[in-house]
Length: 318
Image (cartoon, rainbow, N blue to C red; front, side, top):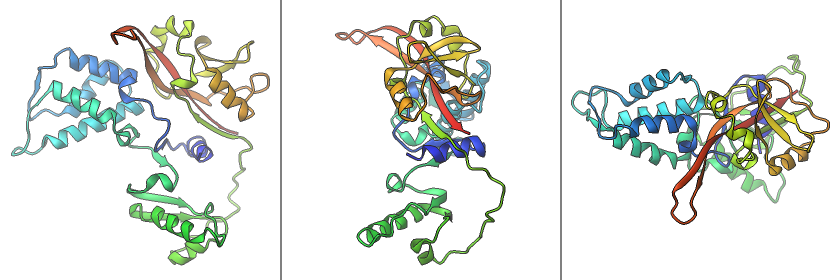
């Protein structure tokens, strides 16, 4: 749902996007988060003075381990640090409180359960009208073409349109390509866009935010490629190449580092992306997440093995 809109925004406009729900990966299962937690857990009793910010501590750590501060998960963790600083009164001499490292660790795990903080703060949230009930955003762009005007649905659709409009706190932009009764009823200020702007509509648009279920987690080449995988960053270019056994292998610099699951192969085939006829172009497959896979004892729960797996993102617009 709305995958075409996400592909157009990212590939044609260069605007990062996020879905509001449905395909998020646990923040604490991400490589970057794990590295941060390991650093914090090495000295849990250390006290951060009231004049030192959690945000600065996080940024210094990411720079030390050579992570890009523009990496989505890094930005999310820095956003969480800013919230922790706000809650402890950092920046206010009268209110600022010191914080114990163990409290920072606890906060990260608490934010892990809040999907709002898994969203890239610089990305456009692409979602449905039904999913935003109870939420608000500073700016909202509402695509008005998809609302039904049939008599047996019009009142329900009008209410939904109103809900969507009122999600905007500061600015609302209504867009439409054909007459809309609901837009007319709002009596907006019109800003016509010229049709002849030289845009050639893409013939193929496909967006796929993969999850751990879309990857063969126990693939041996993944386990033996940990040095390579742990150096990758979110957004790095990778490739999907067809195998002789009707599957897709995940490659980086011509080295196999992963394999898709049968579920993912079936999903791709359903979109006419077949191993025997389709070839991905450079830039269409990137690293979405570096995921920590854990195997544990079923009785004791003790971790018996763990390794990191590349979770791809596909964005095709051609």
